[in-house]
Length: 241
Image (cartoon, rainbow, N blue to C red; front, side):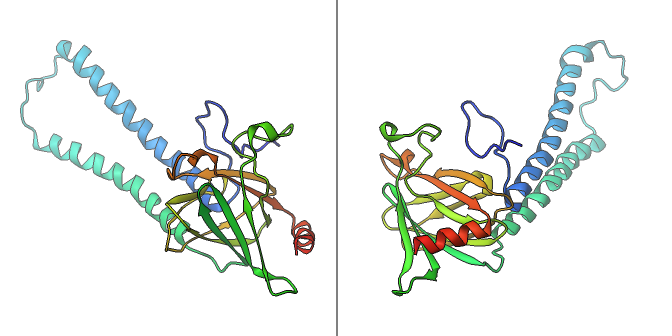
């Protein structure tokens, strides 16, 4: 099976979901599109009847100028439709804000124009936490198979099926930490700590970008997350320390 975890040229569809948050967003999108298509069809039909067919209609009330029942119907029907779309949206909004007890925490710091990550739960024998900076790979240094404007020199390595909390901030200007396949998008604000959780349900490589205009090199702040089996993560962690 081929998963779509990167943006594609002229792409109009959502990336494949790899977390419950993003799966909920996919379902909400389908839910919304059903009602939007229903409304589009209804309004288009009414416009056709009014502009093309109404003049030939022998309906007795074609010259009616006021109708209380009709006014109640065209007021209540859109209200009900909006409620049917609003309730699932608010439920998903609050579910995405809920941070389940995390198994590990990653600190993310946005800077012009790169990211800095810290695994604060893991301390080396010297008493130091593991941290590193992540920069975009320039076009003239890309190797075969690497993605332009998306691949980085270092990436976040995380275990699959593990609740991870990201604590996000910035050191200079506003940034935004966004990974579409995980349903993550949260502001990195100087002087403020924001948090978001993720549960990656399959292994893979997930790409994101800074989604807040932060300066001339805003487009050169990609995010790369590699999700691996727990055994591979432990081996990588031992080597990194």
